Image (cartoon, rainbow, N blue to C red; front, side, top):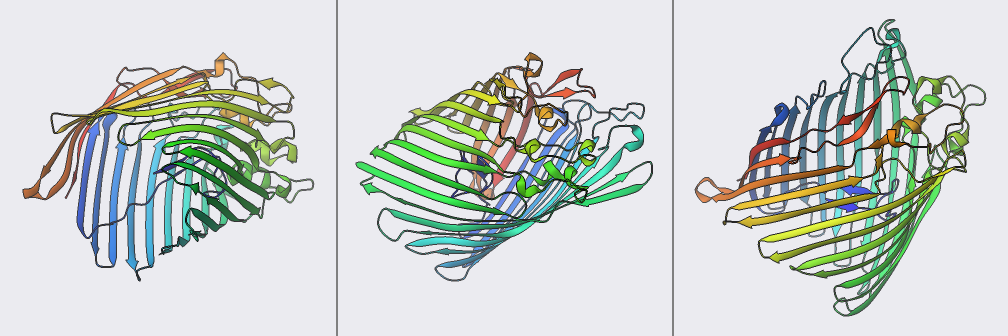
Length: 544
């Protein structure tokens, strides 16, 4: 898993951060079988099976998993089933082809939402998701270059039961189909010692179709979001002067051009410089993040797009964040590492979502989505470190302070920004003891978090992209501790290469915490939706 905590135009296009999951594959000659099972609180069970083989120039890995729970509250049952295969063939010393396929089926109930025909305000009863992903890649590796050309196809279906909730007679089942396919290409060149040149492109096609069936009349309404293509070529280069074990200097720069057939085009530049001596580095970085709206955000406004005065999406700008960062880090291998980072985010053109039926009855203006007034800034300080005081003990911690300001369409500046904690702390440890045992734990604390998802979708006149938040919108500060004890073993006679028996306890302190607020129809009655209290899981993982 690769984590990008800030915009990286040479790594990804739309968005301000990314988590990249590297697909599992067989890398060593031979065979592998992985089995796992666990069960615990709230009727939760999970199992997984993995089978892999590699012989000569061919490898394959396949996996299946299931997780199911009755839920910690009324009407919160959920389940997910996953199937995965990744196979490849080495064509030569330098070229490889790979095929990967993944299928996920999931269903979850909408919490605290029992079906009541007499209730006019009725949220969605349950969600169902079915997704298929396939990729075909041609990879190359040379002494001075490496890269890939990858084609992908993703078909995802969302089913929502009880979507239209204005009156019982309007309740409906909705199906949203998102089809995405395209190409990814990237090549990294190292033409001289210390130098790197990266060139690549992303080509994406997106098709969104909606179908809504009203129960009482048994009629179906269909509409499509305009077919969307995005082509974004990019280039980046860097060079390291000096010796990495002594004084060194590494400047870098890059740029990506986002050409969007539906929304306005945008450029994403980036630049940085690293000054260092040995394992100590001082880095300065700048990058622009571009965030294009999901078609879901605007679909309602385009249902009647042929009416006079309807919205031209080419006038809608993407959200923009200019990210500035300075960091100082030092790493002492196998002993400790520390870092301090200060960053400043300057955001503008904040998009406003609107998915209510009102959107289908009135034309929208461009400023409704990308206001020339609404903007925000976030300043942050992050301190992080890890240390191994003993060979069998590792400690880590990270703390972040955030100072946010936002100005809405009403030209008023506020310091409360949704889902932006003023302080966040994460810490943990891993301790190996008595030869076969491992105790690990993590702790998270969040302070001053505000819930305001509903405000972003408001269609009322005079409402702001950043409305005033009060204590009624503030979530309780959270402090959550999780612990896990593993028993590690091997068994040559059974060909068990690695085995674990474990017991895990989440939210050990039974702290009441919530990530969202529930809202009634008129918005007057709001209450916290609490996450689970203390819960436990026991299980095993073995690799043959």
